[in-house]
Image (cartoon, rainbow, N blue to C red):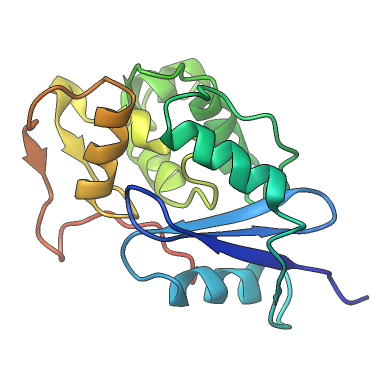
Length: 189
């Protein structure tokens, strides 16, 4: 059975975004580093090998809610999601989705909340594999001590999203700024 995947591109204050949906809901958001190639590669690997078709009308509600978010009108999204991942990843992403707008938490606190207190690194890997950034707000997960660590879209995008939400008032301490150290969402995995 052929999957019906549609996508749309939109401009945002953090650069272009690509959003894809299946019949079930929004399945991927691509932003920042490596886009749109990584976005389309992730769709081919995780959803269907056929190229998606561009259709902004199908994604009008999602695009409108993202515009509202970037305009500081919307603090939470009300969209159906088609979340693809392992049971562990889904547990982490469900906890990340609970982080309120304008607040942050750490990888170790998420590990504790899902009942895996020693799994902060595994939580970090799951957060890094989030195919729905912004909608599942992985930018709100920071390092212990407030350092910005890893973000698939790049640390500059993470900082911009946190500033948009009023969480980041100044330039924070950064860890992992080099390309070799940057923890990126791997849409190719």
